[in-house]
Length: 386
Ligand SMILES: *Cc1c(COP(=O)(O)O)cnc(C)c1O
Image 1 (cartoon, rainbow, N blue to C red):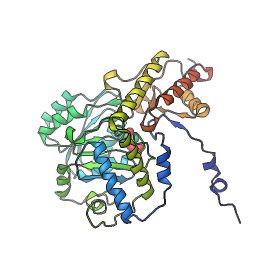
Image 2: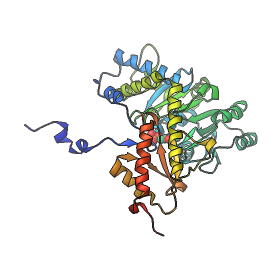
Image 3: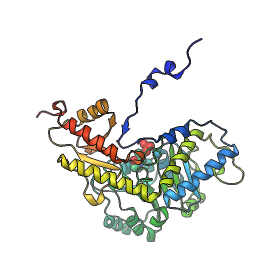
Image 4: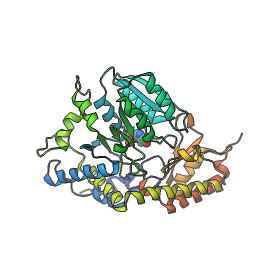
């Protein structure tokens, strides 16, 4: 007989060590969430499982600041949440305005264009927030069915003024679509107060659950737009008119097999956040962020974003002249077991992205990172000549 233990069949998995995840996601996963993942798999229509599904919907409503009935986790990562919002709300020819100041605003534009919407973008310099006045002016020039923005732009570390943007959209009657992939669970998300109609997130950022689910919520107005469609939702897997028959009502109908164990994990992850208390969780992110910025300033490092627009959970740090940014990241991972992120697009090579998301956002992690970074900055192998 062969030895069927995972150690002998999966030697690569055995070699994996725990990494301190301080990049743009995934973040560190708490032990109780790993335990939840390992619970026995049951049927996706088992009454005990339906009970967990219903509990998750309530937990998400609390975290998102909404009373919306249609609030569920979609099977897939954050981008599946983005796709779900656009694919259910857009009909060909619909006018859509996307506010873009980073990678994820660009991704929204791409998704909306593929659905044959008439897409306009308002672009803002990467590293700076969306300017509400510019949005107001654009909305006076043209009528839009949907306006979309990213709350926490993970590619730059910028927080966009979503409440103020919501105020200028409201009188126009457009649906308001907000990406809260990186903000949810790390800073206040107030879907109803913002007047947002469609909102999506992901599990591996501040929810500190492995990647694989995308919580979404639709307002009554969004549900009405969905129900009034002249054409079918052009994607079977993400069609909410079908999915709700599994997530709502006394009699649940099979659509696709729910990722049962991932939903156990999400239930546990949300439970941990709500038990700690939302205010305490947000304060912990703020404290870790300030500790990090103070530490970086002691090394004379500068942040990309102005203080008023900085995210607590994603810190864009300018790479100083003469430093090899790739070598620093490689050394942090190899020698200290710490992962941080690189810049994307126009910021590639110019910034590091240091994540303080969810379970990762703790002072001891900040200190461990600062010590390791100090070593790297003093290492001649991390210098760039010329
Ligand atoms: C990570 C992220 C996404 C995409 O999520 P995936 O889980 O990578 O599919 C979308 N928007 C923002 C703001 C993100 O940070």
